[in-house]
Length: 309
Image (cartoon, rainbow, N blue to C red; front, side, top):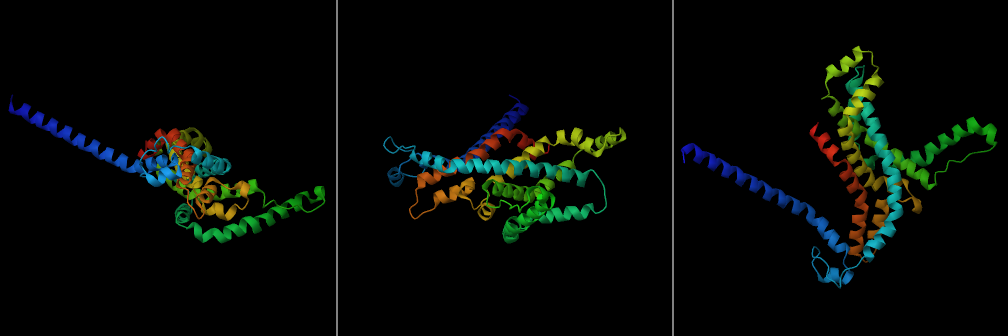
């Protein structure tokens, strides 16, 4: 065997050792990341007595297995899951679409004051939600109902002949208010993500479309929008996760028990003097299923969007 062959074998062994080390590191990371999930799943199927006498991550025995906690959590969270989906899906789509349109106008179209608008949008990302809770509640329950009532009375007063009251206590109206609120607060971050993505799009392609007589809306619909699918996946996953998991705005804007979202019902499920850990873990797993499904459906596009492809 020649010296060159020996060097090649040593290099090959070094590569194999590096690959094995990488796999071991990745496996350790996966175990570390999924260990809490495995603990939650094992606890979900345990009785109270089995949880007390076994380790949290250990599987339940034949006498300690039960589906009662899962059934209780599902029956408690099922109305909240539906309300969360009714609220989160429109808010996610609205914020992603408006963020895309805003980023398109701030990236490919030049106009005076563009930089100032970008600065204001970026500043909107850093406004803490706690700072707007009081004016937000006053707007939805005092200012907005008065504006709507005055508008309806002005236009349709001659038809109804009486006063019209804004249904601020109606549960579906409160879900709509919560959805619009999340959409509005999601536009800045969606705009920033889309703007960074659109800056990588070829300007020559857009300029060629303009020379062919395409309007700004036509360029967006036929060129920008098809190229934006990976970034739409990123913003949809991110925004849906943020909106669905929110509890702060829901506690402020939702006061009808029948209209409570999943996070509110989950918080009520975990409350009390005596903690039922198996029911709590079951509720956490059930509440996480919609976001997990979104990641599974849009996972491939999400990876492309993060990579900038």
